[in-house]
Every structure is written in C-alpha cells, then in structure tokens.
Image 1: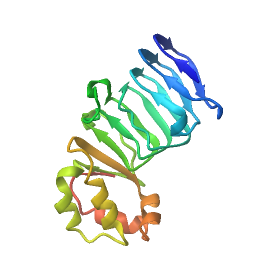
Image 2 (image 1 turned 135 degrees about the vertical axis):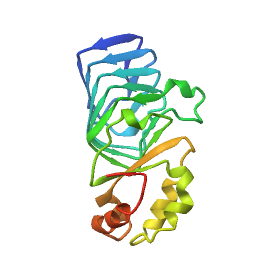
Image 3 (image 1 turned 90 degrees about the horizontal axis):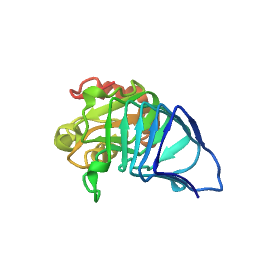
Image 4 (image 1 turned 90 degrees about the vertical axis):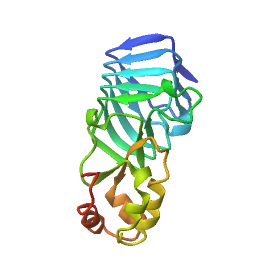
Length: 200
C-alpha cells in the first residue's frame, strides 16, 4: 500500500499508476495546486478525509463507481473518462461533512452516470454535449417519464431519478447512453431539446 497522509503537498505531480499497489490518500491530507494522475481502477484507490484545492485531476484510465464522499474538492479541474461517480456531500455517510465540491471544472472530462449531490451548480462547470446534465432529477420522475424517449431510454431515465433527494444534477454521455439503449445520440438530443432543467 502507498499512503499519503497527515501532510500538505503543494505544486507536485502525483502519479497513481502502479498495478501492484493500493493507493490510500488520507487521513488529514491536503493537496494544493497538484497534478493528480489516476491510472488505477477503483479497487486500488481510497481517498478519504482529504482536501484537493486548485488541483488538476487527470483520469488516464476510466474511473468507475467511485464515490468522492470523504473528499473536499475546491477549484479543481477534471479530465478523462469518469463513470458512475458521486461528487459532493453524500447524505448517507457516517460523516457527510467530510465531502463537498465547489468551483470545479469538468468541461474537459467525459462524465457518464455521474451525480452531483448537495452542491451549488452555479459554481460548477459541467461538460457540454455530447454530455448532458439533468437538473434536480429525483423530484422530476413523473415529468421526465412522461416524455416519449427513444429505444429503451425510459429505463435509464427511471434509474437517474432514483438518487438521493439531495442530487442537484446527474450527467450522462449521450453516445454511451445511446449504445446501452438501442438508440442514437441525435434521438436523445431531440427529446432533451424540449425539456427544461437540462444543461447541454
């Protein structure tokens, strides 16, 4: 195991690339203006009781099913392919105050099935089309399901309305959604263009 804890690291490049190790970031770790390169799967990565401030997080290998619940993210920029990640304050955590996100930039990231929870979206930059973000999905289930979605998209729509009520947005990558639901990005876009509360 490679652990970084009980310290502040500034202006460094940290590469998490070894397939033989578990990387543990925390407890009581602050990374400031660092370039964090992640090239390991979720099972090889633990980040908790950690602050990332003004960092670049460069995901070189698709990061799947990761919950940033123990991380305070401020002013960070994300790049790479990020799938089924949760950002922000996870309401069901033992100590939800250990997680938050603000002023982060995802415009150069490919997000799919990612949720933003208990945060201020006006202080966030989300990726544009072919990514799309549905705002406040949990409270809009009936409204969203009332539309005529292409392929089997209603299944996906149903799933992204089932997050915590505190979910302020869910972001998907249209080509991946289209492939899973036997449709096209253009057909999805045609419905999204008629909806309020969508970021394209």
